[in-house]
Length: 308
Length: 231
Image (cartoon, rainbow over all chains, first blue to last red; front, side):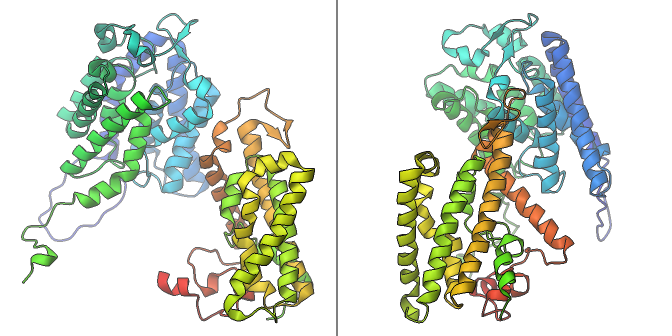
């Protein structure tokens, strides 16, 4: 914690978790999927991820200098935002679009609302949607792995034809955004975060489960739905952002299930092929209300009406 | 409080700019400013209605009974809006299509009703016309500026002339509602920054001392009902 907090009476338990430490864990957990994505899509992927991280950190540094605020880039949150935004882009995106997205993530979504801890939606998700709405052509130009001249739809757009086998989907041998292809490596990263107690498994499990269940209920293929597109990446790494997800356990269940339902509904009935980012953003905005309705009752609390 | 005629006119331009300082008429502001041309069209149409209705209301201010003044104002405003709408339909059909429902909706534009209630019903003919003209020009200027920014960033053109349209892909989001709110927020922030630099209070807390309309408000210092409720 960079913020100096004063506490009252002893005894105190000191915990050695720091913002930078948690962010470092998230970066470590994302590395396998990122490296795999870079190997799959080549130098353009490396370039995009690097540019996103560098721009995010630079944008935060410049903002702090101009507004004479204490420098916060040491907490690594800008690195995580840049990394997540970078691996959320397809390789058809030009570098200048990635730069605009990174600046939007840090300046508009995060710093204008007060910096880390005050952003109302996940900065990387907010930026992804800004880019998706602004540059739909670039954001849907997916390259085939290892063959950089052919572009095709992602497997999610080919769901009906079952063009990609479950095995290829699970290990990530298909087109898509840089870091979303390999469900296996994303799960490995997710398990690492759960073991390190950085995230609770409730949100990812509810999110992925609800997506599969409701896709099946709408007459689709539930397994295909969670292995293709951004469900794994979104559920494990973006929906679990501390700032924009509920703090109570029941709140996390509501949040995760609602994310899954919205994703399935948008994919099935919407005009967009992918609904993960919109689902997360919508639930991010509802998070304060979910926290309010699921607040634990203090011990011995009696309802107003029942009081004598 | 008596103001000089020049002051009455310049009030609406920056000091009490209806859109940025009084935050009135935000609905047409956000809806029609997808292009600079639409902003000019909307601004001029509203200005004509504002000047005419201010003039008529100030002339009739001693005849209109206090209790039915709002319906009376609306009737006068609606009359002028009909005139403007027919003229636009006849001579500028493209502007009419672009503005759509927002042209007849000038009837319920709060800038016009606010100026009728706050200024024209208490002042004589000449200051009322000047007030309407100043407010109208301020409104037009903001709409044009907003339209220009959104059109430039969202389509790469200015007044339909291509600037960067062929070179850089524009950010379509600026033509959509989120971009409208974003540009509007930035302009309000900029106008607050200018006001702060000139030593004027920022409209952060609503109350009589910070109200940008306090010079022309007869209840100044006593507080409006809303201000009391908020505190």
